[in-house]
Image (tube, rainbow, N blue to C red; front, top):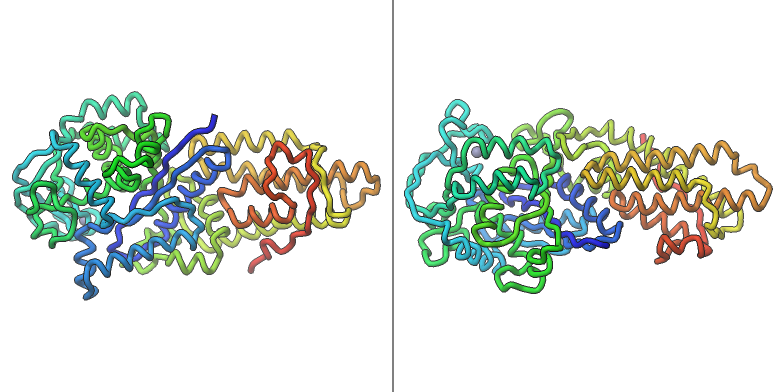
Amino acid sequence: MSKKIYITTSLPYVNADPHLGHALEFVQTDCVVRYQRLIGNEVFFISGADENSLKNVLAAEKAGVSVQDWVNKQSDTIYRFKDAYNISFDDFIKTTQLRHVEGAQKMWLSAKEDIYKGYYEGLYCVGCEDFYREADLVDGCCPEHKTKPEIVKEENYFFRLSKYQKQLEEIYQDNQIGIYPSSRKSDIYNFLKEGLRDFSISRSQTRAHNWGIPVPEDKSQAIYVWFDALCNYVTVLGYAKNSPLFRAWWEDESTEIWHFIGKDISKFHCIYWPAMLMAAKLRLPSKIIIHGFITSEGEKMSKSLGNGLNPFELAKEYGPDVLRYYMLREFSLAQDGDFNRITLLERYNKELANGLGNLLSRVTTLMEKNGGRVKPEFNLLSSAIEETWQKYNEAFSEFKINLAVDSFLQLITKADAFVNEKQIWKIEDKEQLEQFLSSLWLILANLSLLIEPFMPETSKKIKESLGIKNEKKEDWSKTTFAVKKISALFPRKQ
Ligand SMILES: [Zn+2]
């Protein structure tokens, strides 16, 4: 039975230029999306850009342009990931779009029972767009930005998060929302242990510089950034108008809902968002997948350190497939990963040039020499193929993407060993040669599928070389394929 899965990335802020960390989230999510499609599941994959934050107003003022011009330009930059990294999203939402504005307002009205007016005085960090408690500050400064928060006192609206304490505890105890990796669950239990406090979900239009979504029925206030931004996961589907897309991908209980996020925003996604959904009487997500951060040559990437690698220049330099492969292979989703050009080059030469590329060129050369036609009815390596798929599927079921790579690298090693052991280039017996080439064709054909979530362009090239058009895997053994030699897929690099 095939499944329906709705998959989202988080929405990058557009106040600054994107860095390689954004590429990592896009690539990890896209890999999982492509895997799910590969095994026959139906996926709706969305991403977008968060345009309503006060940070954008400040950034635009600094750059001397209008806020709308600023966010348009910055959102276009985020959208460039689609081509630069071959990200296969189906829709891209910008939070200034009408469908989002109307949806966020509908969410507010639906959650109205849990919204009340109160006075808020707190220490507010503009960089975080969040209030801090004295105890959370480091030397009186925001731990993230190292700047002194401002004291803000104003009348605004609150969301009754405290009401959902018990329900959220139960949700995570019973795994109603699955958290991956499970090691991240302790963060959630810590938030819950501290006791949930109601949080402010609006600010005065003055402090918001009149940028943001007006609170319904009170135009003097704008919806606070998190309440606004989180709504994108439903507004992109047409929640405002209860559109068929929303009913199919959110309301339909047979659809799974998966959010991919960075570890810094787990409180908002694992605590705030489910509570908001319960308040609005909407169903909860099924899984929240939390990834680590990327560092550059051992240092945390940041503007001030000047080591924020430009993700678009890197994609141009290495090409999307190589960069995707490196990030998915080198970094475990559960942990932080370090971007290092030396390891990239080592992996490229060892695993792609000498491994996959070399096997392909060797085997397809032999096939071309033998007339260029293969009917893969023999499969001497079927157990190796089966074992690979088993490990590969297991790895993906736990979001251990890097282990999925291990499984197909092992298959490449086994195929190489088979070619060498049998000394296939020396075989003269026609029947035996056909059996060997047929078995090897199946290895390469399976590899073209196994690598698709990682290197979609390379996968296409391998299929072309093997003569695969639209034939289903089950029909391969009944078909004759016209094979063309493929060489220099991954030329060695110095
Ligand atoms: Zn801050």
